[in-house]
Image (cartoon, rainbow, N blue to C red; front, side, top):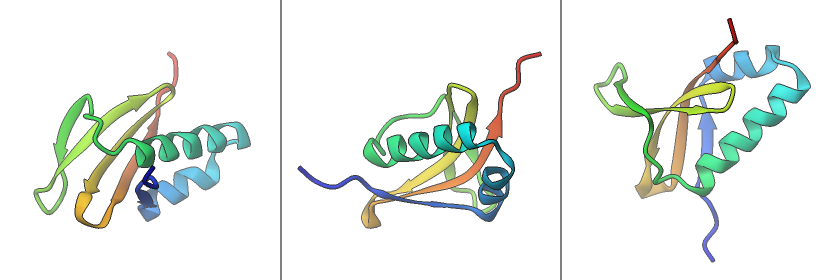
Length: 87
């Protein structure tokens, strides 16, 4: 069995992570691990980043996460996380 991909988070993701509750941080970490364990999953939408690279945008429970995967180096790059609040 091969090890899952590793993941890196953008500075903006780290800022959001640091300001959330312990419960939400745990949810985010589990979601990041889920992405690394299954990097081939498709997002709900595609958004181009500043370099024109197609990034996956996917909803995970309370969060929308934007990421792209570099399969050559087995890495998931997490660019942004947005908390979905009920209105």
